[in-house]
Length: 184
Length: 302
Image (cartoon, rainbow over all chains, first blue to last red; front, side, top):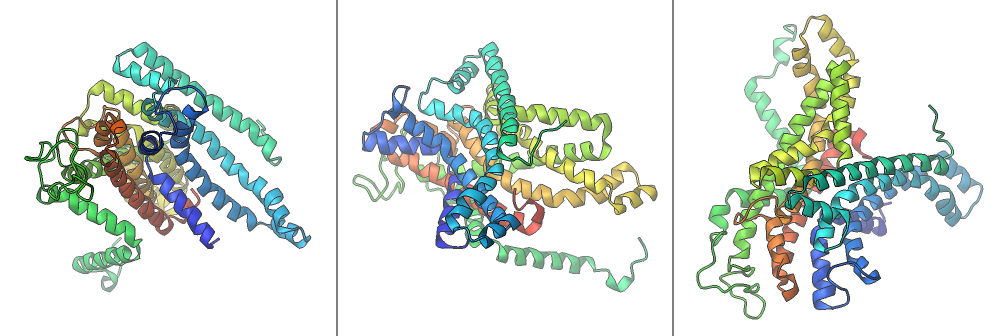
């Protein structure tokens, strides 16, 4: 905390939350497709088609998870069992990697679930930019062609995905944190 | 009410002066960068007509299409940041675009905050079946992906700036409703509310005098964090062609227009509007973070 590394991480997180994903996508195309000619601009195919959409989509979420992991680690490192582990004479690496990190992951894991839901949103724009043939673009085209049965279908499907993801996250909780037992 | 000794009551003028001093003091403590950026952009937005060198909707006389910024070869001092595919001045369009972004960001947040706060108070204070209905509606709202929902509504009602404000307000109110309902549930059990009820205050009066002032801090913090989200959402909608209609200058729309010529390498069309969005959202984030720590210690870890 308050080291230069921490400040860098905080800066990256703040910047990540402020950069619109679709703009990052455009800039990536500009740099890697137009100038460097390393990656294809759009469409689906081999791994090279995945790199830029994944970066553009994941950027924001990486920043939000960085932020949460940081505050969660700080909280866990201040707890009693970490002090005990240190008193036992365990090396720092073991304390941080085995004891602290695993427990700090619990809220991060929830956020990952929430993020997967929010990604359904952000994916629409990213898919449009990179001409990725996914349900986001299907929905976008449906809206503009006034194909409302299609739009309804996709929206309901997105709703089901959201409910499903939440359910899976809830169940996986019990595996990560033994203190949580889902009772009725 | 009338038991307050006269000498401890502040004269109206002194109260106003005290409040002004408090605002100035708060502005000094706020992160400088955020205040400077936000204040500067607000001035730019208000005086856009005076500052902008050209009409943002018309091609510049004597300029070509796709003129680069002035420091590049072929760039001219008359169009500092270059021109777009119709020969319009990018700088003028950015300046006028600030107005659109700020109006949509602030008004959209205001609409979302008003609906959400009203619903949250109603749900939390009245309770019963009203609470049930409002909470089930917010649940359903949250299950819908927000941007998708907004695109859908925007495509239905047609593009215009005020439509976008209402749509974004209608999409983002649920967050407020949830948080504020929770707050009201605890407030409702507090003594000063109970005493007001016993004293015979009507429900409306209790809400107005005792509940609302106590949830305003939370609502303000939420609002400061919503502005950036709404600005990005507006840019996204404009980018997809369902937001602010052309030829009105909006940053998202500029990005959308730049996309068709992206492959030709005219980077200034893409980079500048994006940097503007980045700047304004960064500033609201910084400001919101500061406000959150200042107003509501409980929300610190949110």
